[in-house]
Amino acid sequence: MRIVLSICVLVLFSGCATKVSDSNLYWGNYSNTLYMVKKEPSDATNAAHEEELQSIVEKSKEMNLRVPPGIYAELGLYALERGDKKTAHNYFIMEQRTYQEGGVLMQQALKYTPTVPFEGL
Amino acid sequence: MKLMPLLLLGSLILLASGCATNTSTKGQAYPEMYTEKPVAILVVPAINHSTAADAPILYESTINEPLSNAGFYVLPIEVTDRFLRNEGLAEGEALKDIPPQKFAEPFGADAILYVTIDKWDTNYYVVGGNVTVGASFLMKSCKTGATLWSYQDEILVNTGGDTSGGLLAAIIATAIATGMQDYVPVARNVNIMTLQSIPYGKYHNNHDKDQSQRIKLSKIPTK
Image (cartoon, rainbow over all chains, first blue to last red; front, side):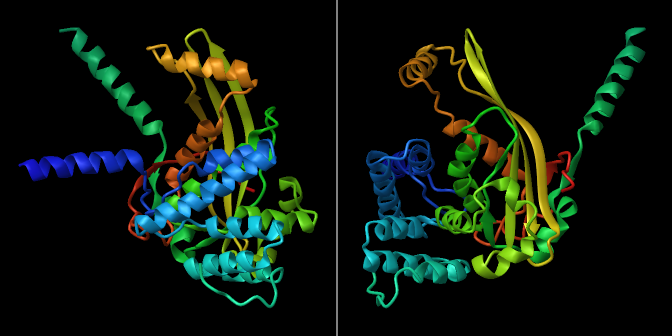
């Protein structure tokens, strides 16, 4: 009984901490930080959104979930804007490996990060 | 006893009005979604006919999450936006005249999602407030140009009215402090509610199993 109860408590708590959709995706605070970037673009709002993207990747991995569409690609854009082509390249490849449907678009994005070999993340 | 016919009549009227609410199944309403099975969706900038200047960015910030949750691969909007802007296509209005097939090759898109925001009306009451959002969603095939899914609705989202006073007070305080209310949850709700009628995509647990799911029919936009 005690085990059942503690499992219930665990399930309840995990339910509160992380919301996962029917497509098994974890989004964190994505829409809010993205909106702030669009509404008031600044170093602070961009940093907050990039941090959120990284946190979504980490939490998704922890929960054994597929990283949601576009998250790796957005991280790639941030790296590209900083001039870090190597990191950008790796993120674009990760987007493509996670979703084959993004292959064509990511090939376009990879034109901006030429001759950089994929090194994994 | 004379009440009985009246009651019967009342019940009949209720029944009839119940029938007037148009419902269908996903399979009947959107058969092309099941034959074509689009996966990669290109989301283009919204056309804004409302008085809220912010509506398009609210839409664009909150569409990736529910559309992906419905099982689709949303082509990374921040990336496609940059490409579209480079082509001088930052405005939703300009994109409407381009045949959807043109986007298949450069983006690898199976379908395009067009959205027009017709209305974004905010109401404040003493005990709360709400936002009425009117929007039309239209998904077109990049293979044939045909409409695969469409939905038009006016959705009322409550933004206050919490009887405890705590939440409402907080919302008002935020609105006063920042000069703006947080409409991200409103936009997200509109997108979630609208997407309830879309047949699930490849990455959803119920993909290709939801043909018989009943949905409320909308006025379907024709273009």
